[in-house]
Length: 104
Length: 104
DNA sequence: GAATAATACTTCGTGATACGATGTATTGCG
DNA sequence: CGCAATACATCGTATCACGAAGTATTATTC
Image (cartoon, rainbow over all chains, first blue to last red; front, top):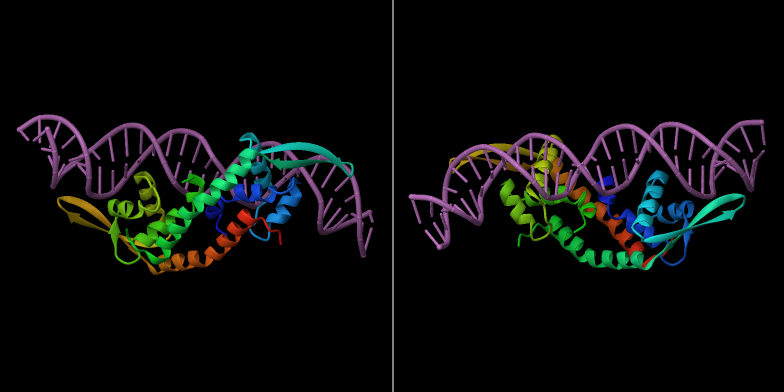
């Protein structure tokens, strides 16, 4: 998919991937991949961004000799998902405009 | 709407606004405004970009003492719109993932 | 008739951000 | 032993939407 079209969706995809249970970077990518392609560098940038804006919390845990970072969604993150849901009607209206082209 | 979410949509909105009949900057903004907010600087950047990628052609015409630039969609522009239409199923799948969170 | 809004287009700098490239380090498999 | 998979991180780059500011004419309002 077009890079530009992904913007604004990737963040919520990551939030959606951790909304039921905490997860970690590598797993998030794999869970999201069937829906949207996302490189590792992109994901870790997004995770840091979401952490800074308090959409998720992080804890490190050792797993098989290596540190693994588990990300857990916060209330603010859940709110963001809800907000996205309501933004969707706008998106749909735009889509209708684009394919039909009826002017208001 | 969130700026990032607009990316990738604005271009097709502009194309949609000129897909039936040629139009000019100021009019395009007004036609698109009910659906999506777009500043003038953004529009003219987009128009130039779409021209460079041959999605539209431009001609200048005098109108009331001033030059007015008329933009007309090309075959490539129409193809872009069709492409967007088919991209939409991907977008919808992502949306389903985000709101339902069912993992494949 | 002077001021203001609307029309119409342009340029510049900035901030946000997705990505490829690259690096580090361990485990597991053939 | 070599290679893929796992797991995380950093850096530089290109794209792009926007606000701000500018230029210039016509229409409207007080």
